[in-house]
Image: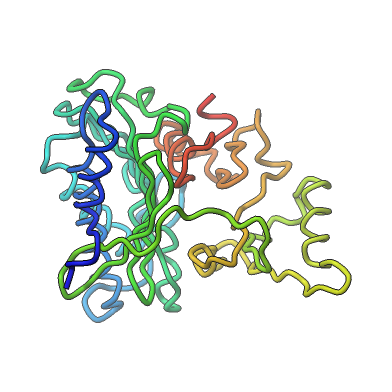
Length: 313
């Protein structure tokens, strides 16, 4: 059945053969992350049949209410990534402080279940992750070790749990998508060299903070919605903060991009991260700085442009 298809393990092995790199091989860690995503996909698919929905009495580092599946997904990531001995440390949105392991040469940064509040309305959710090289391998990682520029990432990606489970990642040479075959438990390559099209008829944007957008940003998106004379108007997928879902359009080949624009409250130099793809919500100012900055620096991109203009500079 897999004779003419490339699995994730085969893809990583071939990429390593063609591009031998100095330092360690992150392939085993990437496969551990993929296994965690496979387990999470199974739990998400069951909805409330196995695990309780709704929030708990705990809050994460952003001050947001933790959902039961947030904790379960976080445990899956921890179990899967601790086994191989590849890690010097981990940072998660669900952990108060970085977890120091002092066994390997990589750092793992992840949000185990992004958009978990969407589960109770049966909307897609996902996991986000980034792998970095440890400045001091086999030494307990500190918060400062995670504050690296986006260009320093060894691998970055996300898993989308929807009608199919799709793992999208880059190891520095293009962005590729792998779809989970549930019968075999394997991720199989289904799209290669994904890019943003030069022309698109759709975009996704979080418009909940529109009143705080910079004037140039507001004007640009107004023009996108107006469209050109004689051509169809571009459409926008938007909504309030908890419910907007860029994942609805992120994997569609006709979508230009999805984003959360920087606002006057989150521009560089203020308390929030200045990253235009995923600014830190203003309510995170009371959260613990180590995990917040590490997430801002490393968790917002699946390719290697600079991921943040403030925390990682």
